[in-house]
Each structure stands twice: as structure tokens, then as C-alpha cells.
Image (cartoon, rainbow, N blue to C red; front, side, top):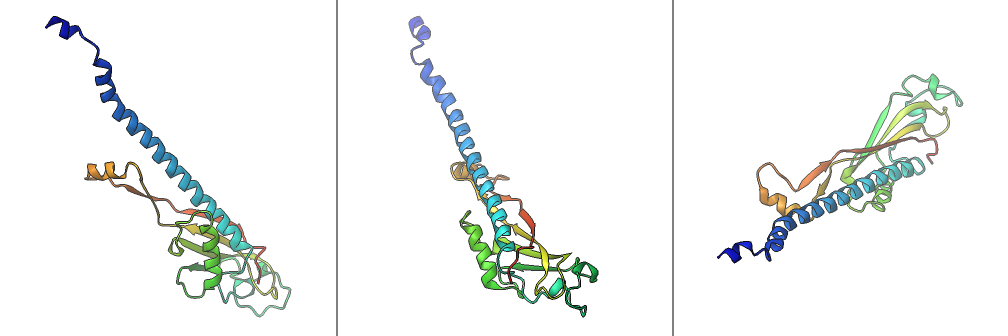
Length: 189
């Protein structure tokens, strides 16, 4: 009986059986965080490329007059001298009226080329007055903001484990909105 108590041949196996699940869980956590950060960076880059595309292509908001507001000022009058030229706003999103659907979808398609899970419902393009430009230019020079919203991240490896814990835990998290803004001085008509 004493020789059995002093026998340590299986102790390493027992220790490994206790430690291995913890090491495996930490490894899965590292992989999940890497996946989360990868998706975060792709969403951020898609937003940046979306705004760049928006300022260098056709304006998605339709019917916006010179300087962003209707004016009777003569051609060549700087927009900064026209009341309201720096305070107007137009927002375009999926299915919104007053927007060129083809131009909006082109912005979304550009963003999807970087981050494929973006849907049109996740994208908002906002044009706002800057007071730049002049009467007779044919279009305003707005500040353009592209916002990526309502994106979620689902855990891949740890999802079933988190669901198994139940209660207050969830296997998805909502990612904060991403925004990028540029001045639309390169907009085409």
C-alpha cells in the first residue's frame, strides 16, 4: 500500500488534465480577439474608403442647389456670403427619398469590397453645408460623412461555450458606429 502512495508515475497526466482545458480556453480567447480586431479594422477601413469614394463620385443626395440653399444671388457669388449655405444637411440611407439609389449603392459596393458583410441598411451618407463654392457651380461643396452602424460581431469558437453559460452572457456584441468625414471638394456632377 505504501508503494502505491509514493508512486508518482501518473501525476503529470492528472496535472495536464487539469491545466489543458484552461490553456485551450485562453488560446480560443486569443483567436476570438484576433478575429474581432480583424473585423474591426476591416469595418474601419471600409468606412474610410466609403467616404473617399463618396467625395470623388456622383453625389448621392439629389436636388441640392448651388451652395445647398436656393438663392437669387448672381453667378460667381461665394457661398459663404449666402445665408444657410453652411447649415444645411441631407442624409442618404437605404431606401431614403431624395437620394440617387445608384450612387448610394456604388458607395456601399465600394465598402463591401473591403468588408463583405456590410449591408445597405448599415450605411448612412450625410452631406452638410460648408459655405464653400460659388453660385453657378452646379452643385455645393459639402462635408461628407459616411457612417457604418448596427454591425455585430459573433464569436465563432467561444459562441457555443458562451451560450451554454446562459443568463446575462451573449455570443454576439454590437460594435460601435464607425464614422469618416471628408470635404467633398472633388465631387463630380
